[in-house]
Length: 139
Length: 139
Image 1: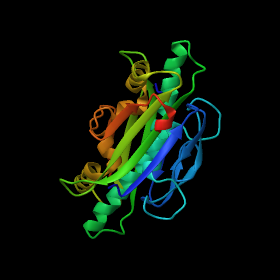
Image 2: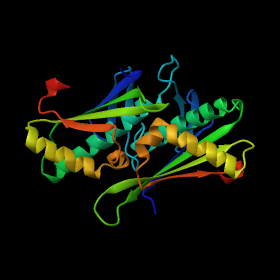
Image 3: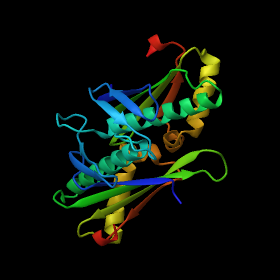
């Protein structure tokens, strides 16, 4: 049995409103348009940055470092396929954990990446990258 | 060069606010909590249902059937891993296209699934399914 489940029903395509079974009616929009609402690129960036940073924080708690500041930034780029028609998302994640140099930080990042449910969905994708930044200035 | 890009920065984990580079500050929440805001399951369901139905509609337009009603419902379930610690998302998509029986509908659905940027991210995942429903009552 699932711990939680939710459904979204889209009948209008890219611009319109999507009904969530959890209650909200959510406006959606085209990435190149001016409409109000979230486009798929924004939704994916929100989902992965939130899920991965939550998992980073869970790993930090297990290591007795629950008060440590961490940051996950996710950039989603809409790119044109070169070898065929159509488009794809290039997704680049960056992780920073306060006071952690490259080796230790990377180790926690990859532990979280192995466990984060959104990371698991992307794990075989060739268009997803993840980088540890030992310095907040690098964001 | 990208056609479009957006970034999301999460510093607070699962419950808090995420800054989008496109402007919005978005509240996020825990799937099992009572807080206001979107949880990752909702964000993934919104992203895939919107992106896939937009692509279904693009395929229908190419076939001269741009006025045809279509619906994509996506359910995201939070599941506990059986063979290891941690959690994963089981994601089930359902597609309906008005007036299209199983064979024709499935063919358009799989064409869209091949082209949709969110589908491409998930395409190697073992926990994502997609089903064509020839009858709207089956949703």
